[in-house]
Amino acid sequence: MSWGLINGIFTINLDGMWTTALAAVLLLVGYGLRRRIGILEHFCIPAPVIGGVLMSLLVLFLHHRGGSSIKFNTALQSPLMIAFFTTVGIGGSFGLLKRGGKALIIYLVFCWGMALFQNGFGVGLAKLLGIHPVLGVMAGAVSLEGGHGGAAAFGPVAESLGVSGAQVVAIASATYGLIAGGLLGGPVARWLIDRYKVTISPNDDVVYMQHLQEGKEEKREGFASFDFIKMLALVLVIMALGSFVTGKVKELYNFSLPGYVAAMFVAVVFRNINDHVGFVKLHDKAIELISDVSLGIFLTMAMMSLRIWELYDLAVPLIVILVMQTVAILLIAAFLLFRILGKDYDAAVMCAGFVGHGMGATPNAVANMSAVCEHYNVMSYKAFLIIPLCGAVLIDLVGIPSIVWFINYFAN
Image 1 (cartoon, rainbow, N blue to C red):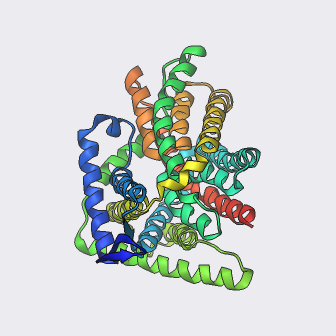
Image 2: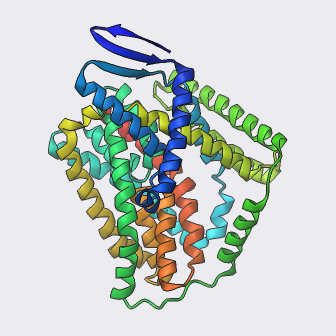
Image 3: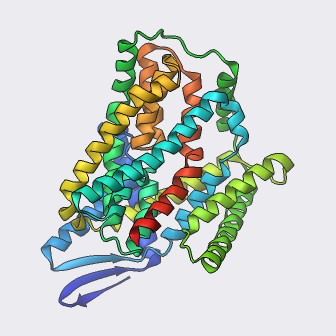
C-alpha cells in the first residue's frame, strides 16, 4: 500500500494483498448487515453487493470532492471469477436432465430462448434510445438471468472492447433485477392461481420428492481437509485447461473467448465423462465451499471498484430498458410459460421461480417459490427440482455463449 499526491490529488494505492484483504472484510460486513437489516435479507441481496457498494459509494464521495481517491489492484479478481465459473460447470451434469423429465427439458429450452430474447430485446431498445447496443446486452441476460456474477464477469469484457460504463450498467441492472424479481414473482403466481382457479395440488411423482430428500442428505454430509484439497486441485487443473483452450481459440480463430467461459465448458465435459467412468469422487460440499469463497471475494472486488459516476448519462435510457424488460418477462411468464407448463399448481410456482431467476438470481427464485408454497401450505417438489437446476447451472450452457456472441458482434 502507498499514498501520495498524483496530479494534485491525494491518492491511496492498494496493492493486490491489501485489495483482497479489504474485499474479505467488506464481504464480512455485507453478511453482518444482511443479518441485521430485514429488507436486505427479504430480497436476497448478496453480501458481496452490500459490502462492495458501501466502498464504491465512498469512492464516489471522494471522486466528487476531488481532493482524494482510492485505487485498487484487482489482479486476483479474474482467477477467483474463473474458479467460480469452473464450479458452476462441474455442477452441469446432463444426467440431471433425466431426473427432471419432460418438464425440465421444456423449461430449460424456454430459459435458453429467454436469454436470447433478453439480449436481442436489450440491443434493440439501446439502439432506439441512442446508446451503445452492448449496453443493452448488459441490461439483458448478462445482468438479469446472469445476476451480479454475470454482471461482474462480462462488464469488464465489454469495457475492454471500448464500451464505456458497461460494468456499472450491468451491476446496476443486476441490483434492480434482484429487487424486482423478488417483489414480483410471488404476486404473479398468486394472480395466476386466482385467475385460472388452479387446484392447489402438486405433482406427486416420487422422482421429485426423492431428489429433494437426497439433497438434504448430501448437505448433512461433511468432508475432510483432504477432500477439499482434491476438489481444489481439480478446480485448478480445469482452470489451467480452460486457459489453454482460450489461447488456442484466439490463435486459431482470432476470437476473444473469456477464460471463465472455456473453464466452465471444460468443467462440464469433465463432469459428464466422470459421471460415466467415475474417475474422481466429487464432494459437493467442498465444491460448494470453493464456489462460495471465490464468488464472494471476486464479486466484492467488482462492486468496490465500480465507477458509479459513469452511470449518470445513462440513467434514463437504462431505466427505460429495464422497465421494458420487466414488462416483457411478466407477460411471457403469465401468458406463455404458464400455459406451456400445463396451467396447474406446479406451473404457477415455477412461474414465480422464473420471474425470480429470470430477473435476478436463483436464490430469488427459491425465495419466491418458498413464499408461494408457504402461502398455500402445499410443496411443489417439481418446481424445487427444476428451477434450481436450470437457473443455477444448465441455463449457462446456452446463455453464456450467446452473451459472448452478442458482445463481440455489437462491440465491433
